[in-house]
Amino acid sequence: MIEKVLLGKTAFGGEVFYLRSDRVYDIPAVRIFASTQRRIRELVSEPVGTIEEFIDYLNAHPETSKPYVRKILSYHHGDIGELDFHGIYLKSVSRLFTFLGWMPIGANRGIKAVGTELSLRYCEARGSIDLPDGRLKSLSEESIALYQRLKEKKVPREDARYVLPLTTRTEEIIQIPLGRDLAKWASYMKSQPFDEAKGVGEILSKWNEEENGFTLPTEEVPEVGMPLKAEDEDEQRRVLQAFLSDKPGDVYYDPYTQSLVWFSKRSIASFHQDVRNRQVYFWWPSWESVINDADFYLPHSFPQESEKEARSHFLDLLEASRKYWRGGNFQSAVYVLPLGKKMEVYCAIYGNNNIYETVRLRACMRAQHEIRNQYRLILRKIGGRFPRKLGARCEVEGVCFEPKKERCPLYRRYILGVR
Image: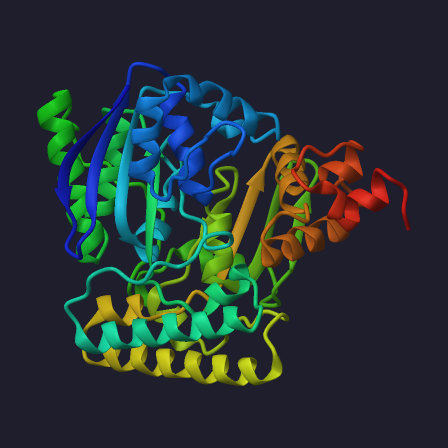
């Protein structure tokens, strides 16, 4: 039985819930559904459209949770196997909020946790958070309208989402250990210069103290994330800039220390996906640097006339962002940025096994296309010096567990032997 407890509300119409169950596989089942919000038809007989409806279904059909989790584990998505009785459900929060929230999660970033959120690669965008700024609300509505026009022209959801701003609404389930890890994550969110993140951090910090009796003896905030101002960027970025070239895709691998470092310039949408890889460490730019950079990513699937419209839309959003910034409204300046906005990020992975596992997952055709291109570039550049063969699972192990794999050109080439 999954119990859902409302802990509080965000500044822009979202809600924060605590989920708990007496069975360890119930919350992971909800995490799975949160990602694509598609039922597994042979396991879930009734149509369900929201996380809350899915929770109600599991409570009415408790026999469903365990096979639901096992089904996804059969695709070798191992992190679903991190079972727990607890979870935090963040309803109707922004893409900015979730992007910020993933940054400190990972062994080398400071906080142990797992989670999933509504994937705009597979799911329909559902509008924006409730905004008090009329101009920002209008720009968000224009973005949604363009998104719908792109889909009408058969542009895949994965590509149409690039025109959406960071105000776009999403939902998230995080499994985070109560006590210190939750306190650190709440402290991190409270430190962000955005009302929505601050509010959720305060709600969870207070609840963690009152409900669990846990108060950090000192404030612990992971030293990761994106500062507002360029002057506050991590000094290590300048060190890496001198070490690597400023050319996107510059890669350095040291077989003696088993370290891989590279420079990447990709869209917010791409990094939003990649930041959930807990093995990668990122040195982020400031929001000021992102706003001052004029580069965007346009998917190849955009028709020619749509590409022109998207470019114009990107420029309108960037102009609005810079105007907000000059006026001192830093929050709106960041919220209005589209998912297609590029940013310059330095990245690192340590340990040959971590490098191998990351490339194996990210070089797969199921990976988001910017991420896939990045990691296939890495494997081409370091493959000759790496002690193991690098590539997608089908290339290096000759197996594939993904659904609909028969349609994949890599599967056909490396497993079926079709050239």
